[in-house]
Image 1 (tube, helix red, strand yellow):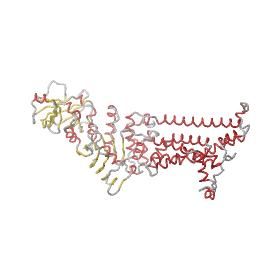
Image 2: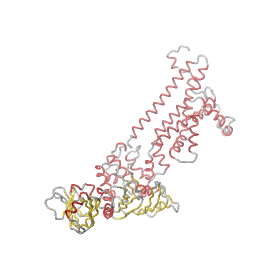
Image 3: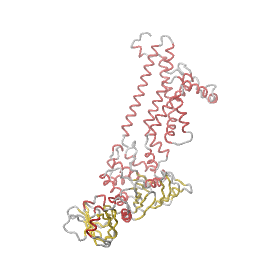
Image 4: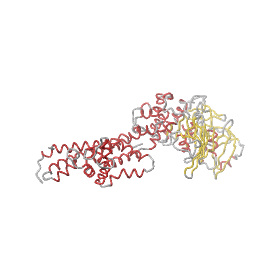
Length: 239
Length: 367
């Protein structure tokens, strides 16, 4: 351990900045792309009866219970350069392996169960009679989804997104297995902290990134609390 | 016109009902668990029957044999539930306009301002539904259903969740809706007073079967008299004409061929028809025309039937002119007065016993 001066805690090096910005970009892209799939999956699990529902539910939750390394390895086998879909995707110009887009895919997959869980709960909490009322007023199921379910589930959707975003920022195992740890391309905050702790004299950098990670995580938690509190206040608890 | 002929099995309960409504209000009346709400759900399209069909204005909504099932959203049937089920994320105005937006452009015949005015909800319009009282919410719910310009309005015990004061506020509003907007209404209720006040036709459902279809007065005189019915639920319905208002004490006389019924407060225009519900337990019998007694309403008639139930007897009095009145008396009183079939009697009841719920205006189109 070496001595840190207080000022040095706030002076991020270019490499550290790169890792932070990369993490934010990967997490944002991962969250935004999984958002529509998350909403549809959550709604289907909450409101629809279809064959294989249990299977879908289990599949969605798999990344939550599997070791992240296993998820990363499965992604590698499916989407890697020599994977099942890799070559055909490469033909149309989509390459994931060792790219930041691959890291985004890994983060999206790992965050998906968290996202769907939060959203599903808020879809399930909607009073079914509101949907029935909407139906008797002439709205079909699609209109009802957009006018009733979606706005009423909005707090859960936002919270689910924040959880997925936070998960994406912290993701390590699946990402490093799938797309490795390339500075400037796939080295996220977590991977960078890990790398710094492996080299002599990297502790200061690791500490600075740790502080940044803590701040981002806290902001995300506070934001989700505020959103839930405001939604509860707006919708009241009387109905 | 809605025509229903459906059968449905749900566990041990079986529903087998067939009826058609008329203009104005049709009351689906029955105890809880009799299947009236289930029938309403079938009409609205929330539940599929096992067998049978439902037609609205000649259009088939359900026909099990022909595999026709029009989904809820395309039936154009307004439904008001016991709980108002307003959309909590929309303002009152947005709630009111929700169904209107889905109604075909050419069929938005019910005017927004007229509904707001009739239901007295102008002041609530920009509020969120979470800041309304129970009665206000239910008024908005009725307005919302009405503004979807439905071909039929279903009200499923819309007053059941409200206290007496709120009920008395909203009943007249439903009457106004009935009279001002030309939408047939099917009203589900287990409260005699509500059904009687509003309905021009009553369908009584018992244990999943239709027991009676017809005029409300007939329905209740027959139903309330049924053995086994709780004596506190026995009431009679008298059809009368509103006489000249005010005797100087804020009372109104209702003219009946057998006598005069006094009620507190105003009861509509002189000359219009009014229905009065009299509880059998509120009636006192006398052999002579009563003098020096505080009860003001006196009707004369003859004993048409006597039914004993332990120490209490229910007496059916055939009133002079028209209608019948039920009275419960003790066996001892019956003996003391020596009442027999055909005895001439005077039936008295207190004006104070008739509350605002017990007097209803029969609608113009209903009678």
